Image (cartoon, rainbow, N blue to C red; front, side, top):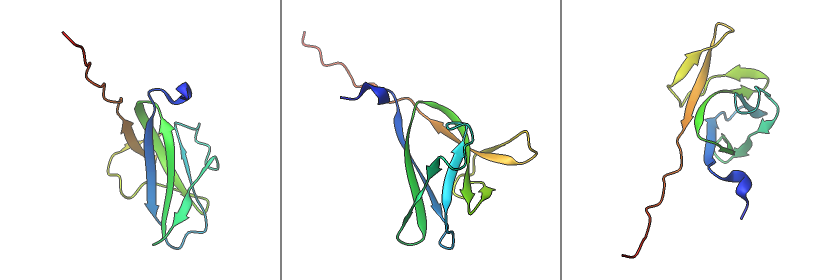
Length: 103
């Protein structure tokens, strides 16, 4: 078992952008590197990328053909230092399985 992902949660980012040629993801989880996480184009014009993230609060944006954009499916956002907004996602801690002790 790989303990490198211990406590991390699978988070899928999905965007409808049928006319886009390239979509990537930048955020506080990758030092706002807009070219690090490329999304894969899926049928129907959707783009997806799944990341393993530790619990916490993250700000992010999609980069659609070079333009930084909010996630239109996520209404949670916050102001940033550039006078615009970032989308926000909260990754919860993994639920703890109940203990099965015999008395």
